[in-house]
Image (tube, rainbow, N blue to C red; front, side):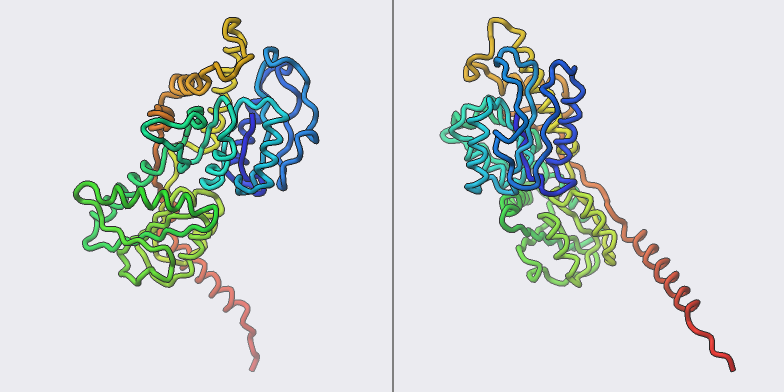
Length: 378
């Protein structure tokens, strides 16, 4: 089982997911494990021959699937990354891929795996599109499951929050900054499209003004609202703008600890809210690992099914059934998409508490400067 994502940085979705998957692997009886799992690489994933050799046993005798980290370096469509992935697929008997990368990298991973007869592909990305043609999903994508609720549900959560905030004031100006470059662009385009679609539906929806650059943001009164669709860099950009908003809502691409630490230091009179999945990305990846292993053990125990021909096993359907039965609050699939879970919007920073903290800090600094001022004797 390959766990794919960008391992170059700490505190990322894939790093948290890998920690939870490793913990679950180590909880299994020692006789069912293949030894310690390899450590993730912050550079190009090593050639499969460089990994510690796995025990050479027959497929029918393998008690569990062995998790292996694969670094996509932020872009699975890169030729060198795609070639290394092909090497892993040819060297190992890969039964599952859990994708924990960005939207763009996950799309590249899907394209790379398209010719593969991989039994199941699981993504924790909210954007990845499994294409449908003439009502039918191509055979290379029928083995795919998206565990994260898609961006349609995120857009609905953001618009519901906007509606509740707008009701508290009249003639509120709502601007939406959609900023994303390179690997971020796929996610930003998808969420913007969802916001535009749902904003036009139903009465009482606030009017949204979209822009792609901070220079396009217009000065507004203090009761205005800004929605920031993007990642950490987008937050840094709005921090440099001198406009003042009453509320700033961040999309789930900003849901990481360095964003929280950064906005605490912004001396701005806004309440910051961020959108986050109802359940953590790493939890979805951990659930996938447990469900896939559970199905693997069942197939091995079924002497009539066997595991000699993986193309004959409806592996994806079984994984979907296990997830829905074992975690009914988390999973309810419509096709390949999970409709349960959704998104929450919580306040990260209160402008009132920030103002008090800034006042206290300035007061303490003033007292310190007075104390340090030299005294001249007459």
